[in-house]
Image (cartoon, rainbow, N blue to C red; front, side, top):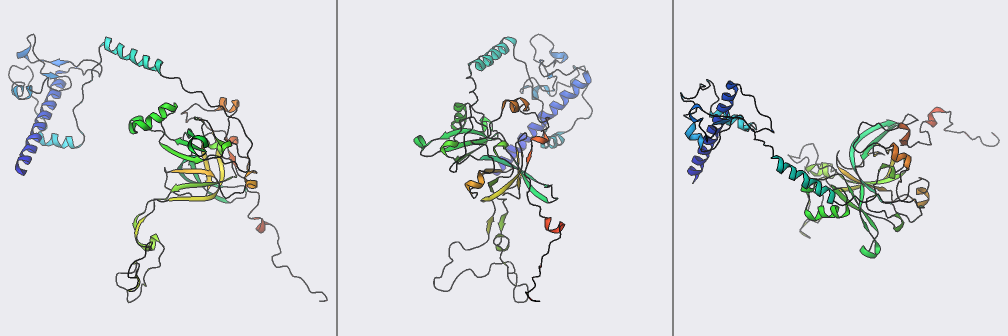
Length: 431
C-alpha cells in the first residue's frame, strides 16, 4: 500500500513538472516571436504551428504560454519543436526540479480572464440596478431628546478597543500615564423592555464584520434591523428613562473629562506558569538541603486524615485570559472628533483587545450629578453635524479646542513651593 502511494506521488510530481516545462517553453516561444501580450479583458492571441494552419485547427500555444488542451501535452510535445516549426527550441529551459522549487515559492501559471459578451454584461448590469432599486430604504435617523438625570438613572456603556498607552503632563508638571480607548462605530442594535423581556437593557454592537463570516441567523438579525454588520455585541442594563432607539450611535462624547468609569477587559494570556509567578509564592530555600526544588510549591496535602488535596489549592496552571474589572478610573481627556477616551492608569488586556466601558458604580449620585453627563447620551447639534468630517476621512484634523481635558484643582507640589511649618512649637504658659 505504501509503495503504491509513493509511486502515485512520484507520477503526479512528474506530470506537474512536465506541464510546467511546456508552460515555460510556450512563454519562451512567445517572447522570441515578439508577440505583445494581450490585456486581461481581451481574448488571448493564439499561435498555430506551420503544419496545422488549416481551417478548423486547434491552437498550439496561447499568449500566456498555456496549451490549447490537456490532451495535446503528449502529442504535441515532440512535434512542437519539429522541423516544420519556423522557430527553433530555446536553448536553456529550467528542468523539472527547478520548476518544483518555484512551485514551493507560490509560483503558479497566470489565469485567463475573459470579458463577458456585451448582451450578457448588459443583463448583469440591469440586474444589479434592479436589485438596488428594490432594496429597502435605510431607516431614518432616530430622534433623541435630552432628559433630566436623576439619582436612579443608569446610563448605557460602550464597547471600546484598547489602542495602547501614552503619557502627558498636566498644568502642575505631574506626569499622568494614560490608556487610549478607541470607540469604533458603537451603535444600538437592540432594545429590551420590561414588558417583553422582563428587564430594561440595550444591546450594542461595535466594529465591522463581513456577512460571509457570520451565520445566516446572525446576519438576518442585522438585515432585519437595517444596520451594518457588527463584529462585537454586548448588553448593558439601563433604567427606563435611559432607553435609546435602535440605530443610535454611542461616541466618545458620551463621556466627559473628570468623571469616573469602570473598565472591564480580559487580562493577557501568560501560558502555563508555576506557583511563584502565578500565585506569588516565595519558593523553597536557596541554601543547602534543597535539590532541584527551589521553585516547587512543596507539600500540598494533609496527613492520613483527610488524606486528600482540598479543592481550590494554589497550584501551577494556565495564567491570564481572565475577565477583570478596574473600578473608579479617571477619564483624563476626551477627543470626540476621533472617538478617543483617555483613561488614567492601566486597564486589563493587550493592545487591540476590546473592553467594556461604563459609568462607575462606586460613585454616589450626588457626586455623579457634578460631572455634567449628557443624558441619555450626547446629541449633536446642527453646527456639530455640519463641521463633522465625512465618514472615513482620516485627513481631517480635530480642533484642539474641542478636546476636553481634566484639570487637577489641587497642586501636589504646593507643600514644596511655600514655606510650611511642619513642626510647630507650642510654648507652655509661664515659660
